[in-house]
Length: 128
Image (cartoon, rainbow, N blue to C red):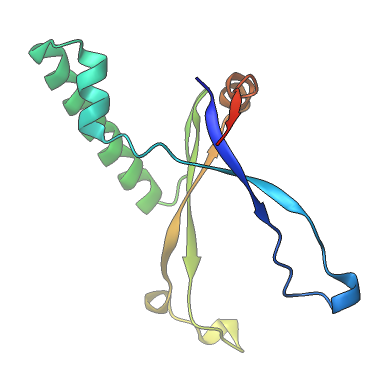
């Protein structure tokens, strides 16, 4: 079974009529989302002890990543990927007049490792 996809028309609102980019691009059709609990159940193979260990491990890793991001680190899980934060504030004219309190977390970024990208290269696709 492959990843289902369809094609979506390119909508170019930036260029003039004669310079508009035309065509279609592939769009992945999600089969749904797998929750943490779903993952734990599948990985534990009906072992209550293993499920408990997995849940505790996931919670510890989550707490560690959040704590280190709050301390200003990027968190690189070797052969998996790197977590980092992005920040935002209202536009300012003079950066020296900006207070740290006016800056907030915009989001968390995740960049997959080259190893994960290589593992995904052999993904097969099926047209919807």
